[in-house]
Length: 209
Image 1 (cartoon, rainbow, N blue to C red):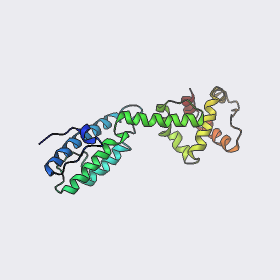
Image 2 (cartoon, helix red, strand yellow):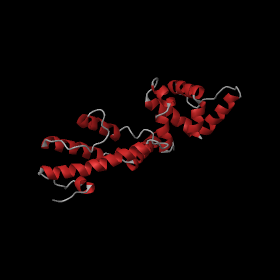
Image 3 (cartoon, rainbow, N blue to C red):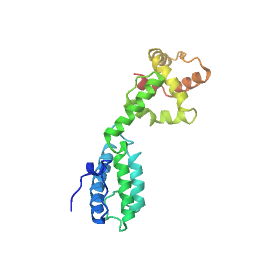
Image 4 (tube, rainbow, N blue to C red):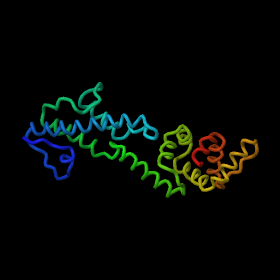
């Protein structure tokens, strides 16, 4: 009877054993690795810029764990299902979690960076993924998104970013009770920009500085 390693099992060419005892070994190996990742994700959630890591793969894992072990459970590694088909099904759920990019810190960072690159290319900004991640989870963005679609918001912010010296100067003048000079000439964009500069000057300064 052989032992197994997680990397070996996740290899696309790995042949799943037919023997139930061997399947239980596979299950234990994977469940242990998955639970270690869950613990790490919970720790990462305490770090700056990673507060939302318990969404995505983690949230899916918790749903699967509840399905198999009840609402009180928080880990995969419990007694293996008695029936072979259920055992295979649970193994597949664990594999889905382990293969998800958002089950690791590196995968989450890569996801955010890819999203940031796409946004920067599309809207002419040069924002770090950490700044964008914080922005999309902020009350600032949440409130705006209730009134406007994401594309309209980002178009305005992109134009403001490309004219950030002018915008920051306008915000400084507004503190001196002088009229704010806007950079958007489109009526809809001008309306969004006016709301952003009037209601969220502090957040805009932080994003553009």
